[in-house]
Amino acid sequence: MAWSLPPHPANEVRTREELAAFVAALRDDFIRSGADWENQTLDRFLDALSVWITAAPGWYGNFEQELPAEGDWTFFARALAAAVVYE
Image (cartoon, rainbow, N blue to C red; front, side, top):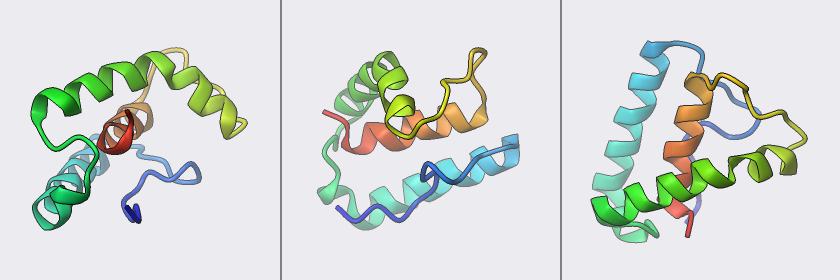
């Protein structure tokens, strides 16, 4: 799947409003091309989200970034984006 939604490692979600817009874009993408998503049901999506959050230090390390100690809006948006394709 060609991923066109933020957050790419170079992008950040800084505000609650940006996070809300990101989630809306994720929903729109699912409506358009959900058949291409790895995790097409809510249970699979949430399972992937949980597993990705656990593995997040490796993702951040791959992009030479530090995992936010307290979490942040960007972290949550990245976690949701990863759940689309994370196995």
